[in-house]
Amino acid sequence: MIRSELIQKISDENPHLFRRDVERIVNTVFEEVIDAMARGDRVELRGFGAFSVKKRDSRTGRNPRTGESVEVDEKHVPFFKTGKLLRDRLNGEA
Image (tube, rainbow, N blue to C red; front, side, top):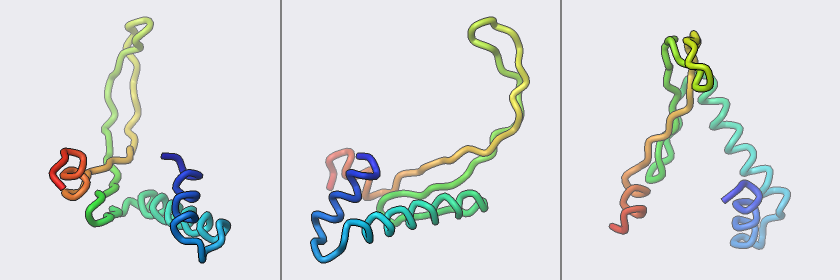
């Protein structure tokens, strides 16, 4: 599902809301999640999962094409851990 499909589904299920308002709400939620993660905060959506940021240390990697050693800088990457409800539904337990 992409963002526009999510907006359309919410709009269809809530005919009392204008599509532009639903779009603004969805965009605001995503922006808040992004801003929180950029600050290094953890974002938890009960039953769905938790978004956090993990630090990857610098390391020596390899260029797959040439096999040459390459220094890879430290970086921060997003991490998602599923919630119990989501895991259970994916495994047909709920």
